[in-house]
Image (cartoon, rainbow, N blue to C red; front, top):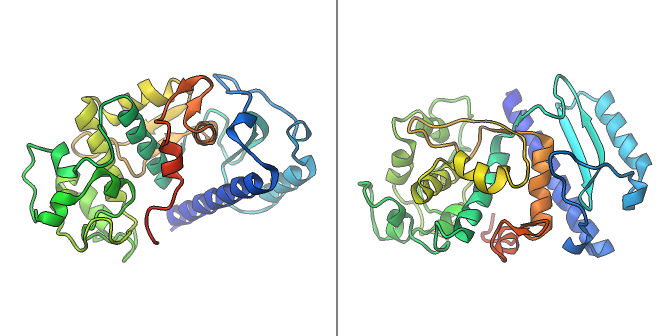
Length: 297
């Protein structure tokens, strides 16, 4: 139960963060050109006032966290690349990687963009079945053959999947069935189609895991190894574990452990349109595509 509560809290924080960024962008003309500093191993601090923020409001927020029983373990606030407020609770510290649950999906999707930029994947229009030429896939029809990488990225695969119809503690939950199988990717791709690809959105952790498998298939290394070379190391991110499935594929939808600072760096990368200082990490239009609506929810 508490695991689900933690995920809800994380989701709420992310939604608030998106709202704050969007609101600031509209009201104060935020643009990537405002980012003048990119942290490496260390991270420079600035006062909130130096970055046109309010110490009073941030201090009140920190005090609220101290006084409440909210299961918050770490909080990082940045502005124009600088740290303006940071706090850790329970036994967590600056260097403690945290299980980020479904926020893992943001890292996996980012890595797909990097794989496209680096030439391992052509584009998001590639058919999913073409990534697995040696696999015999059940329930293969014209709809499944038409499923593309974009459909997987946007969780509009059309596969007959629903992980919200019962608890994640229930062994019959679709997620648990998939990862309890001897070959999770085979399990996922064997599912029958319920809709045309792109027709209906459904929250699908299996799709995010499929992205990880596609990264491994196209690059010849594990998703973690690929991430270390092209994302974690270039951005000096502190990463803990990243669990794998029964086939040794890093879980694309959950079970990545990172620090709050690493999470903040991913956000900073997107705020700067996929570039880190002078290094282009993502394709030029990737951040625009990633932050644009692709399905009705």
